[in-house]
Length: 174
Image 1 (cartoon, helix red, strand yellow):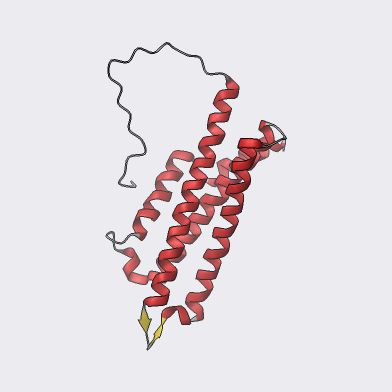
Image 2: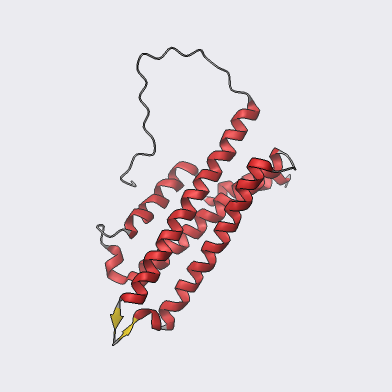
């Protein structure tokens, strides 16, 4: 869907002993995977905002850049706010998973919260970016489509935000 491979691994003539993965090691890997997915979503959201703002500043309509119109300014401001929140959530999750003093349960809640927030923010930001671009943003050849396909692919692999919010509730004992 995103026109790129999520991963590729080729092993030839490898002799590796079988290793049992402990539950703690698996949990740690899953939390780090969630933080990495949130980081990818934040990066895609950042680039979507950059593309939309640059286009709004340079596209001229009625003798003025379209960014001068409130109907374009407000979605751009909303995108910037969503991006700031996602960045903050990502930083907190990275810290909690790497150095958090409160144990795995709290780290799990923070990591899943960050991923849920980042995915929701990216969905909102790419939708608003498409609106800023108008018809141009709907061409498959445009760079914005990469981020639109990327979020669809990530949601298929990592699951929707609702699943991560359920993991937050489980970690919190709710």
